[in-house]
Length: 464
Image 1 (cartoon, rainbow, N blue to C red):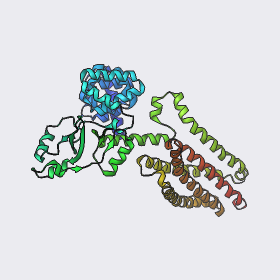
Image 2 (image 1 turned 90 degrees about the horizontal axis):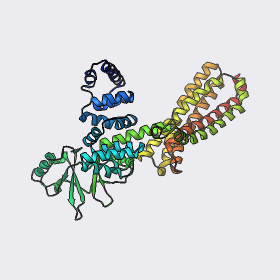
Image 3 (image 1 turned 180 degrees about the horizontal axis):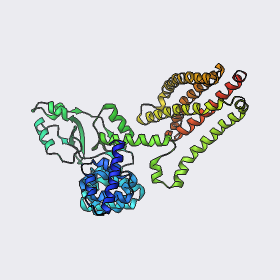
Image 4 (image 1 turned 135 degrees about the vertical axis):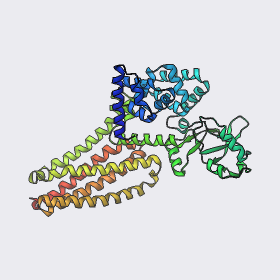
């Protein structure tokens, strides 16, 4: 849904809510007709919580369950607290259990007691599903175990292709994916050993009389229930899997992780890293009090302030240069802004690379060299262009040399700092996303202004 379409839907819901208050009970139903649950959830998150609850209450349970899974955290918690408890249990029962566990986990972050009530209500309706949710919640946050589902098709190696098709047709309707089929063997203690995997495509192309053992891929790639979700995403992306099997600590098949859950992880990680790069973390602000959030963010800002005071000291030392050639001050914001963007771009690339495994501390030299070369090329282009602008504006060639040289040095510094700071932060055990943005900006200001004003002081007689 585009921005315009979302705005139209939000405005349509607001108009329907006003009409409902005037007695038109069908207005909201018509506004929601034919809308995708994800679009409804996005629109509801922009409404006041009371209005969102009114909209939610009009949805049939099948659509309401999908909407609940897509809602923003604050709206989701409000609905869980204020909707009919019995209905919430039905909605959780309709969701895939990994999604239900995700909803309960979000509530547990705010109130473990209310999360337990949700599970107890689900237990009254479906003890088996409640037990599965409890099992998923027993795994660490951001682990493979928290993402997996046990709804997948199991095959025996002795089956023929025709037998396998029968098993697929009879499989549970709640199976999340049929792209991959898993060949298992029962262990003496009741566990399931994964002995192979078979794609539905290979099954379709096989001869009807062949056995699954003949066409399966033995010893498939797997992860452990405790594997970090970012590592899961990296493996799925590397091998172009649609799903990835998960083994427990005994080596038994515990579940699978589907690619749609991995996409959610990647989007959440990207949004989190981006917010941290600009000095804010939406999830932390939502879960914590203002005092707690301030304590998380202030140390980095205080460090930035100290470094920026160094930039202030540089300007103060060369204030006589600015008094002599006031036009120099007009270019300082341009140099700072462009260099800052270069540094933030470099930091974002490195932080994402560290998350996905494409950049590691072992190959940091390669990453630094690549970014320095990239920054040098961009710095030369921007330095020449801004230098020419300076020449035309001031009608002095030395003025353009100062501007161009300062821009080049500042952009090189920003690119290097945006690359190095996240890596050193990672090595020292700090969050690279939280430290990269503020420190990179501060360092490039200090060095950029120092080079700028130093060059100007050397050429002061030619600038007047």
